[in-house]
Length: 308
Image (cartoon, rainbow, N blue to C red):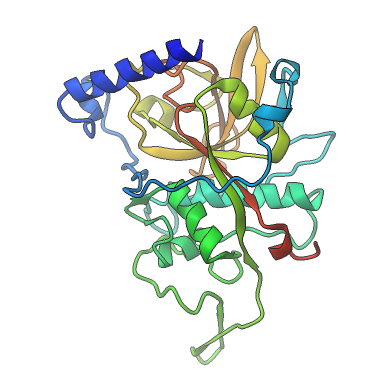
């Protein structure tokens, strides 16, 4: 089965190359209206080595025994997810990569802590943008963002609130400002580090195992104009060669009317889709905009989490 999928992936890449320019999705979809959102996924030119220290869920879980549905928004009545975000206010910013990666790691901090314990930690997308920690408002890569978090750490939102802006100073990482307009450095603040990082093979069961065992993952997707117009339900759109241009996070899965789907968190505000989330068919990259083809996970370093 995996050999067949790899052959299909090769064919998909060949189609993209034959089209003449893999950065012009209109060649593949000439009737598609102009998209509202620019490409915010720019894959890093650096091929980072995985940072794996512990067994992977796909290796120690019985993949055939995974539950039919699982949703980190409601695990035995507890919502482990952090707040919904909007990358496009107070102005447009192609920072999807920073939102998907920070939301997923913040969710995993909640999971490690055993629930949404006060004060909740929301890793700062602006910190990554300020330091080019994986990219900027012109696009970036969640794998590179996790590498930055592993090497430098990341502050929470109270140190670096989101401003949707390039060119802000990387240091100090945490500061506050006074009524007279002057600002000064904060030296005692939370700096969260990533411990392990890895990519997930493009198979639904492998992704499910990782999400089930350790929490949400960041994935690339071809955000088409139809997805931009999504208002609810299980999304499905045939695209012969999905070209990733956006990053989201998978937070669970389910089945409705015999249709298996992913539960996905977006970063376009809570007014998008189903309260900031969307559902999309599972298991066929021709119909699900390639969401299973390029996913990455990271685990927070326990010693850097407050109260642990």
